[in-house]
Image (tube, rainbow, N blue to C red):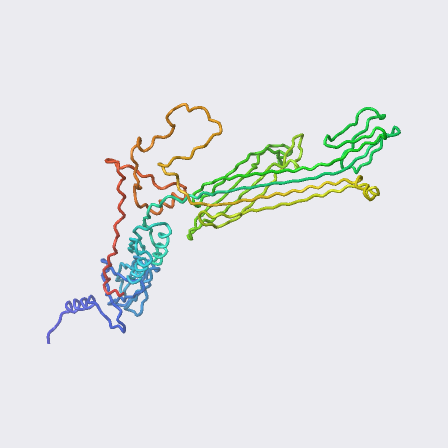
Length: 513
């Protein structure tokens, strides 16, 4: 029998401890074995997948640096189950019996199946766009070029289903904004007709003045003592006087008509989505009594009156024009004026409409049609005498007034473009020729023939999305094109970034998908 020394037995036991133990498992989950504490092993795991780490000796405890990425569960004294929860990087430390440690650097990657599903969805939604999605660490990077901001927002809504996403998209330089011309027609017609009929009788017989009337119209005053001239306050009265009987009469018989017509046709131009307003009138001062520390003090403020229009146009996806429009017609009303410290302050007669309409290009709408018809009939008579047949009309006065006011506002929106440079600008026709011009050469900025050609294309075809959004917030225009340094031709547009492919990460030792 061969003797084995104690030193050889010790070396054999040490080798058996170092050899890895596979350990039987009931499932097909991959297993990895413990590395040395001085050299952390790199492991790769897929989100939603699991792996098993085997330890040659009993495990006392374990720790994970970021529990939101992975979940570590000890399923028996020598096996640890690792579950991938979210993409990222973390560390796993396993303490073994006897003081040894197992250190792992875990990389949890997103499932290629989910990433491919996002790419396929982008390809279906944007078949003509060059969009690339790459996923590194725990962040998705989106690159490519889309036509507008709406498309960019839809792309990011799809990609964010993977988690955190960085928007590196570029958008095409947008075309010029749509310009909308609003033609407004104001028609205001005010008609009035009145009739007056009355009779006053006066006599100074027997040296005594006698007057009979309804009081609606001022009767003439007879001369004192029957001598002299009558005093007539209204020259439009018909006066008759009989000297033999000392009886005079004035007849009020008037008929008047009035016609006032106001017509305005302002044309207001605005950019799509931007407000515009127009005022044709003036401002009148009115005093304001202050309160607080300056109580009793009077300041002067000004208020607009006349024809005003405010509107906000927006083009819709249907091709129509949605209008928020507020026309207003106001005038000074001295009938309801007030007097303050000797100054007459008129009131305002205002007719205003605020509404929203939707029209096609060139269509018209009557958004305000106001008819105001009023009739005032005044009858004054002397009781008793006015009831005498036939003669009773002499003791009756009658006044009738009719007013008819009509206001109509018609709006017509049109999508327009500027007048071409080659087309002649409309000129005004003056009834009387004005003074001759001081120069025979029209005063204007030199045209392209003197200044040289300008690029017909923008300096770049695409621009960063955040730059376009910032310009829209600040109300700036698109980038001004620049000249090429050598030939004066348009500068070549910047090439869009090359699509960055996503390389498949290497599989982790013993990792499953």
